[in-house]
Amino acid sequence: MAGRKSVHVLLLPLHPLAYARYGQRLFLAQWNEKEHSSRAGRIYARTGGVSEAVKKTVEQIDPDKKIPVIPEQADGVPACKKLIERIQKGETEANFFEGMACNGGCVGGPKIIIKKEEGKERVDAYGDEAQYRTPLENPFVLELLERLGQGNGPLEHMVW
Image 1 (tube, rainbow, N blue to C red):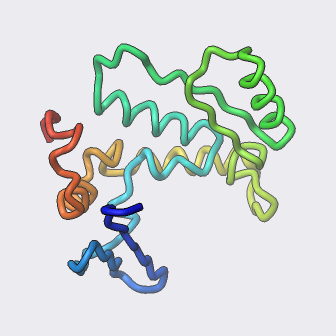
Image 2: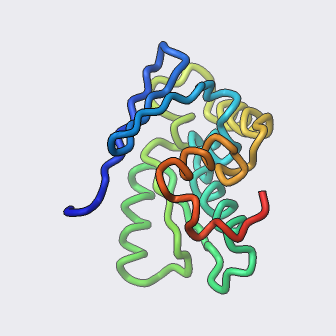
């Protein structure tokens, strides 16, 4: 699109630095995903994790939101198909939908080495250890948004 600047992010999995390029500016951020990830990001690997993360983040952005996030999840491909059919027929009150192809989410995927229930427990425990509940509490995310020119957007009213 004309007039829009693109953002390119390259994460090097074996290197402790993340490089981000915005327009002509290049900046380097110290990166340790275990220290900087939020609970919201850490729980994506299990069914309901994405829904919980979105709901908590939206509530944090606007606690008085007149239309709350009402999530509904589907667990496994057949359930995802049924959920899509229900959406098309208007048979749901939800306004946010999460579909996980694997039963239980990624923790129930084809290469699991522990039972999905234990995987969910471990994902939740890992999420509970996070320093931040949502990305909105993470100073590294806020700094990145500021550098990208997004610091004066809809979040400016929040007290950090």
